[in-house]
Image 1 (tube, rainbow, N blue to C red):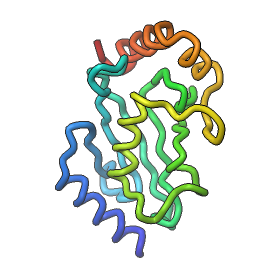
Image 2 (image 1 turned 60 degrees about the vertical axis):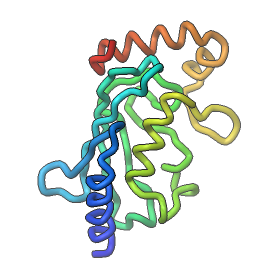
Image 3 (image 1 turned 90 degrees about the vertical axis):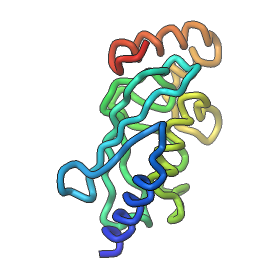
Image 4 (image 1 turned 90 degrees about the horizontal axis):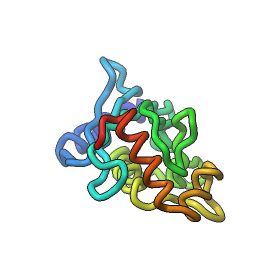
Length: 153
């Protein structure tokens, strides 16, 4: 199956690059189900947080995006209360076959410092409003959630 070959190659690439920002791999023997650990970026309210992410590759990957969800609660405009991540590159209309899982996880890590809000983006409206109107309140809440749910401080 083509998707299994692509996923295997991307796993080798992730292992070779050995990012300091995240680690990932299959859950057990299931090549189509991965878990990732993303560390919060320095200088952000997510710093030192350890965020678990669940990744499910569809059978038609890389022609369709993986389903990626936070398992760790996170206070962020592009993540809803169910852990769904709203990033353009994960939207089927924007996902490209040359996007790989390393790109996706790098984008999620970078997302913590630059939310995608505004026209053409999906986001949690109330959190986005606080982010725009009262950044200090946003950062206080984000830090509190990081400490409580992701072990950051």
